[in-house]
Image 1: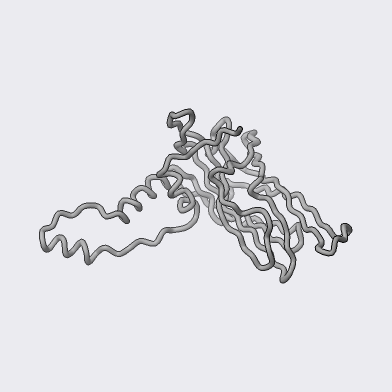
Image 2: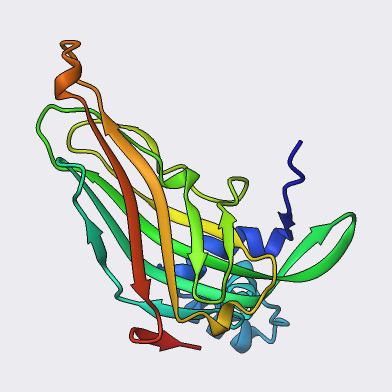
Length: 211
């Protein structure tokens, strides 16, 4: 049985937010002013603690924004590889010990642009190839479920993660994702079935890099 690597609680909690979405914050100004006037001791509130924890994890990522690589090879399905983040400092547990691992994270959108067709796509079963000579399978334990059956008009969006075997994620110049998709004609006419093998390669160093 596959021994899935477990990210520590703090990293797992904020992983998706790290990649490309900003958490909204609650305005505590009035509350803090009241405490200051009354002399009540001020302690960090939960929202502040969450933001501090989030920032601590964000600092380990190098993010490449605005990649927006699109593949429409399976007519009716639009796959967008939106953004990529990499780190060599992801804290995980292996055999009861905390260790640092290299991770590649990809933010992806899967959209069925048709009005009445159903497709199957499997980006959550993707293989990652890198310019540094790595070829690894997706980490299904931590990745979002963005694959499978995609009904008409549906958009699935999420993050998928790959643990490198030799590290050096921050040295990667390009990545390539390979996975499959298909359409089965509901009438049973096999000649109308469609199959497509995705191979989405993007250069990272030419994109916006954020530390």
